Length: 355
Image 1 (cartoon, rainbow, N blue to C red):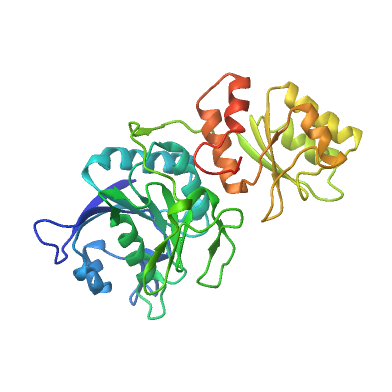
Image 2 (image 1 turned 180 degrees about the vertical axis):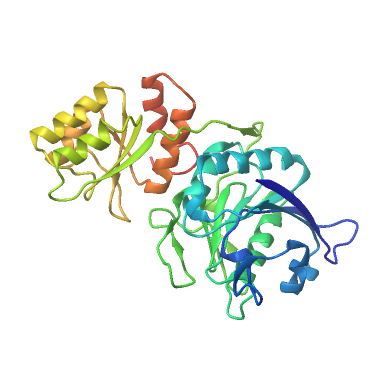
């Protein structure tokens, strides 16, 4: 894998309003149809202005770092997230904002992971992509990219308007670790159920400043450790002891996202509770996340979740599964003592949960 740098020639003067680094990881947004090969191929970002002549109207300095070969988002890995964090760290002082072009399938996972890895952000890091390739006539790539660039460049009294990891798609800006992909065939592919929008676009971009994280004066810090010893256990009626045991005990996982019913409810069978207790006794961190898109885990509200609370399973509040998985990866990667890790898991680290 290599990173290729491309400077985009726009009509920007000697004193641009902002400098933006675009990082292309892969995905539909950067594809064009090759008439010879008869399939989609990544296009040359040195020719991006030919596909998006609107870029010439920007008073920005734009640079692209293109990952080669491009990564299909289904192949996105922990190492790729760490690579993205390093690229931002290496270029943080050189640019006013960052736009990451990414495939839609795992974009919410990547945005969540980067939100934990990038601590004390005071600049925008915006993920975006497309459902239709940039070379097609009816593509959403143009609007998504152009607006993401505008948001990344916008400041208020010299301070970035959105100094956090976010995700822009189809007229809405979402907090990165609150987003979920919900559509595979429509342009409005992402939503956030348990947190308001950060911005909404129409004729103007309407920022919801009360919901955006404030820029911090603390030093920017990048973390370089994630653990992949994490699994998801999704409960369903009729789940067997063999399945639960294989995931909680036999997999060797150190962290488990337990997707429960409703507000955090689970079976009360003796065998089920016994296997959970065995996992906890082994030092496995278990985070209780609701299968519902909206609402939150409230352990102890019903008898069917009181057992989980009493044995030490951590309630995930209103966290998404994507944010829960990557939060476990992040905390386990810090190699903290067990009780300290449990404490951090229940905290709101980057706006991912409502306490």
